[in-house]
Length: 184
Image (cartoon, rainbow, N blue to C red; front, side, top):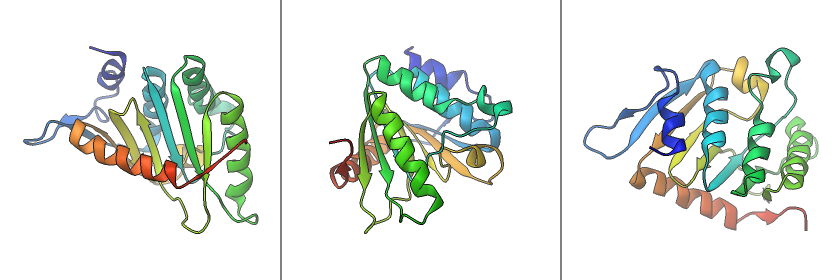
């Protein structure tokens, strides 16, 4: 069993995927405080690639929880392992509170080896997607932020299985190709 499947099987029972009826896939609903550790476990287990499409990213976490969920550490480690790491972030109006966070996140990810693109404002990128090794997707309403992990009522789905993840991968490719290169 590879490291990604090991990471999934090590998730808490209420998060661990179950087999879909009649379809070669697994899925699970991820809510509450299970989302953050699931996100990090998937990134940490990645073997070839990490793709993010995010509406908002904030790496500012209260000290009491920053040791529990360290997205920047996990994402940085993936890039340091030589994985193909790509991120598409929403471009917000300058007056949006998310604009400042996303520009800082873009710089931080770029500096750590990610290829980063910014999605044009004309079509707001509202997706919250993590695609790992083209085989496992975590998507839903969770932004990469403390509020999404700890205090918002958010819902995400963990999905694996070639047919279903292939559709998510096509979405990721479309978002990537329609976004502007950051850092050039």
